[in-house]
Image (tube, rainbow, N blue to C red):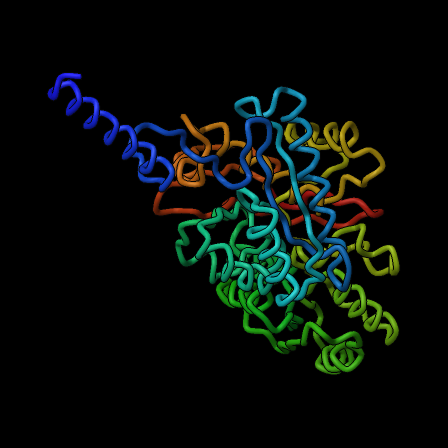
Length: 390
């Protein structure tokens, strides 16, 4: 063989060998397919949720049903970009340490794409220690605590109104509509209760008696006695359902019947099955519209989807929370252009304008992740909620 041909063949052989070695070492710089985002396959998009399905706040776990109903309705129409939506929901027992462990499982083992309808002020704060470093979006934390609403967090998209908004509504209603003379406040001693109480104070209400309680308490007879002895003619109750029920029973046991003005977190008809005599006549803050009587178009859609896709499950306000939060999560997915990644998802969420949901209109921007802005007051009548203000 000619010497030049041998040299050319030797050079070609060395180049081919180098290319093979480079491929083997992962150093090949030619075009390659982008790896799929966690939680996204060619056929599915998987969300995670932590919510109490046991313990004192177990009723909040019904929000899972609302998420599933909205996802099922979307899936029935082809999903998003041809992908069906899935949910993995884990019980956090309304306990921050349990919530953190559940969130780690969702993020590190189940590799969910994002989280939706995560419940609780303290539990959400704990979960963020996992979600934020991992760049996992959270749509619809079920809290209006000021630590979320007042501070922009890149990965967190609020859906609920601020607790300051609700607290101010309740305080104004007690003072200006009911014209109560001596107002008492019974509140949970954490970010949830304190944020709501700050809102009450923002309404110009100075409580004649303000009584905090520890979330681990179960008996509130002493607190009920204090309020009765103080001549309190109206109590603003800022408590989770089980605690609110126990407190109302303690008031009933001493024949103490002041006006009752409650946070929407406290007082839902389904939560008072153990003390139905306590519930009628209470006034309650709300952003989910009444689900009986004259229905809004969004309420009709929610009830229809629950009946069709979550048969046998009550279409409760708790389920309504999850449905609304899932509506926002879906709107963000549908606004993505191109590949579905967490970064493209957040960019799409930041572009949402005037999204119509069960609980109000939602808009976001890169500098504003606030939730719904409007709340109103409803009154409990025969285990139904009737709008008092609009």
